[in-house]
Length: 250
Image (cartoon, rainbow, N blue to C red):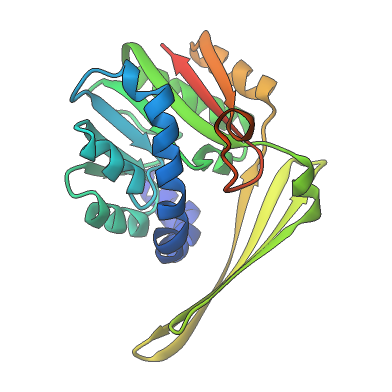
């Protein structure tokens, strides 16, 4: 699969969703996430080290990392997300690519992947490929920190999120298939543009993995030193449903 095919086919829905993510979810998540990084990650990183923000979205986390003096590279599959990321984090470098396929010539002291980005990898073998790519891109004793949504009782109830403003409307309807461990988001968006109201409909999916599955995939990729942190229990992180942070060392 070429990068061109990957970008145009797989990530087209994320392109259409980029403006909403940039306006609402990116800013909302970045502040508490960076506060958690301040506990789990930053004390263990050398000043001005190289950090890869994998699946960087619209760059709010990249901006926070750059402001702390790290040399940041962001990688994402959505060109629309990256255009906004370059505005939000002008000090960072951004690359269009697929987390399952990327190869970087330079090594990073740290790789992060924030805001359940890796839940959008639909198969466990593909998630393992991502972990192997991360392992290969890290310097010796480098750190990999990421978070994943995890199943909890609230998932079974479904959810609806409505955003209504003068120039846009967005409705997000969430449902969860417990048998398939699959979260489905039906998104309907309206934006007021020069030619009038424009509508976009899309469906986004997340795969929920058990902690044992994730730890097994990390081990297959070479990560044998891994710690887990329940975001709600250990950091009082309540912006979304269940979430687990994983900190792995090469």
